[in-house]
Amino acid sequence: MPSLETTFCGLRLPSPFVNGSGTLDALVSGTLGVSAFVTKTVTLNPREGNPPPRIAETPAGMVNSIGLANPGLDRFCEDDLPRLAELGVPIVASVGGWSPGEYATAVARIAAHPAVVAIELNVSCPNVESGCISIGTEPRETRALVERCRAEADVPVLAKLSPSVTEIEAIATAAAEGGADGLVLINTLRGIAIDRTTLRPLLGGGGGGLSGPAVKPVALHAVFHAYAATGLPIVGMGGVSSGADASEFLAAGATLVGIGTALFRDPRVVERAALELANELERRGASGPEDLVAAAHPPTSTSSRA
Amino acid sequence: MLPPSRSLAVRAVEACGAYTLLRLARDGADAGVPGQFFMLRADPAPADAYLPRPISAAWADDDELAFLLEIRGPGTRALAAVGTVDVLGPIGHGFELAPGPALLVGGGIGAAILPWLVRILPDARVLLGFRSEAHAVCAGLVHPQATVVVEPELVTEPLARLLPGFEGTVYACGPDAMLGAVAALAAEHGVACQLAMEAAMACGFGACHGCAVKIDGRWKRLCVEGPVVEASRAVA
Image (cartoon, rainbow over all chains, first blue to last red; front, side, top):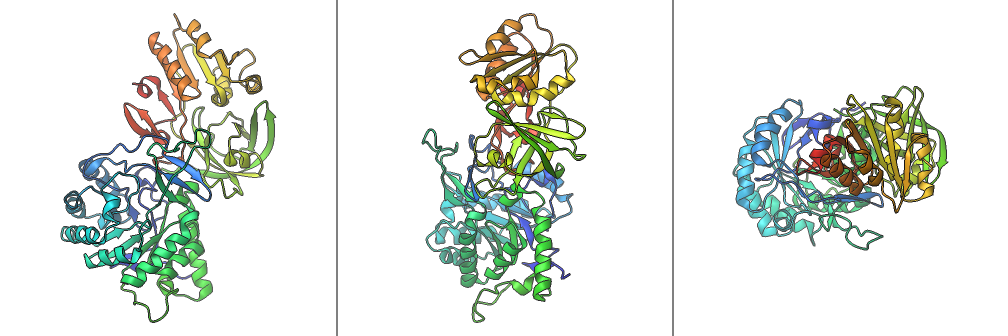
């Protein structure tokens, strides 16, 4: 059976599978087989999150409006990070904010922790009124934010992008120009659920973010074009629930693959998808997941810098 | 840590008035304690029921786990139509049984978790409220001597008559409005009260943050803090 080991931004990881930010609390359930644990987005100040209902099931997926509930930077660094460090997997810390200064403050403090191997800049949360998502829809702001945070961290800095933009290439290129070491895409798509009885918005936060198998083609499109535009290493996610899904994301240009909503449905999904991917690699005669990266791109396309 | 997950065979699906009784072969699965819950997902699940459903057991025998369902949509409908159910659990904090008399209060499908509690507390007084006679059929599963009221009468009416001088614990499960009223009555009479609460939930193991409920004055994850919560913490 081929090894699933892979290298992402200089990090050697036992498999390409990570969790999507906000879809796993490793302190409650354990790491469930991920090769690196991506934290829920941390903001400078604590956030209680949006009023319920926060989730609505939709065809082949769900819409969520959690609202970046998190303990805030101080408690994250003092209480959570030391406990996360004991889990035995590398930690990727997701950071959000309402201004470049807020991001930079959080990045500087979190990146200094030895268990943190990378920073993910969440510039794409659909569930807050401003801040995060407005930055990630503006190439100039994205570039400036990444540049500022890049200067604060000695570990790789990744930009997590929204698919809810006109041209993903422009945002991805801006992140690359700002010095991003890698990209993470996609965050959830903007969505809304209407209560069939009251005909009012169902979620307490009004709108929300769509995830699950329903978004997979959108995610593959974003990964494909962000890779073609930048050649940066990519964590691809959006509707992944099997080894076959993972191989599609690798082919589109991802080096790592995130599993999110599928974890809610089945907490054993990462173990199963890893086994399926190993079987697929063997069937294809591949020596590892890196053999599949960018397979969907023509040979003349930008070469991988993974 | 992650609760255990099992695939359990469906032994029987039986109509129980407006509700449906789902009986699974327990097959050695950990049943937990009354008030804890399980995430149930039909196998195979239809495309419009992607997520599992959080449901507490009606009872656990040596060889059976039983769930009383209210068929509300594709997820619960699928549970009543398959041969196998994926079961994750038991999850969360169940009822903490206190010494002394017990008063069990169930509203609607909230009555579903009481049969098991009655087996452990056979001397408990049971009050049940339903929105129709068809829904009240399930009262027979809970306790033959249960006091049953049907709307427009509310279960809080007999409760209000019983609470003065009651020295024991109230264990309640039902819709939020009922739980709020029960908690208020219990507080008024200085009676200890535990509420089994409900919330829309995607995962059941702390990951999704979907099941936010006000506990201790803040939005907290019901799957982590509950589903059974001391009434004073839930309506502070």
